[in-house]
Image 1 (tube, rainbow, N blue to C red):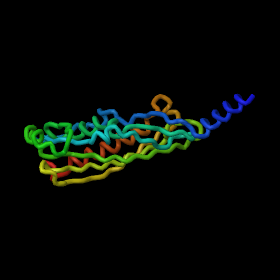
Image 2 (cartoon, rainbow, N blue to C red):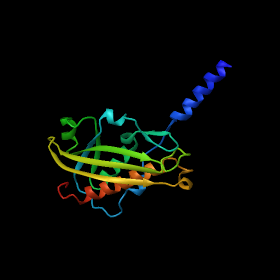
Image 3 (cartoon, rainbow, N blue to C red):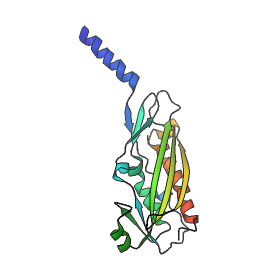
Image 4 (cartoon, rainbow, N blue to C red):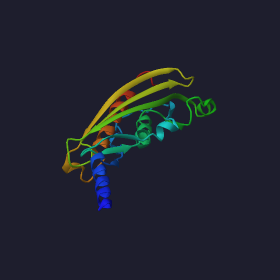
Length: 194
């Protein structure tokens, strides 16, 4: 009998505290490409620290559960895709200060993203988030490390129950898609980034 009480107490604790479920933020890359772009001859790099790449974020889902994801790892390909829309070649860098690589690749600008996220759900019974927000900041530095450009955009994604039954990450992907399209347009229209 005491074992049953312990088991039931443990089960109740699990139910009350909820679980954490993995989702993906990566948007469909075909949706963030622009058809009408004129590429410059400029080569650029982007830098995401290993700490950021490996950073796992936990935010609220529905039904008392949480969701977890890796914002930088999930969206690195999206960043490279939007930079490739304007620039000749795009290189991932291990450091913003790697002068030999910057010089050998003739890199003019180095982009560094900052990502903040939030999520929520209207449902008390299902865990996938119905709403997701991505605040994307992109900073461009010159080859000598001087900040020359900075923009912040916000992407919001919403998914109803009947939509996310086939893709539990849908609201996160929609928010990322919107944020990276908005940032792509900022980069394409920035005259200083030539």
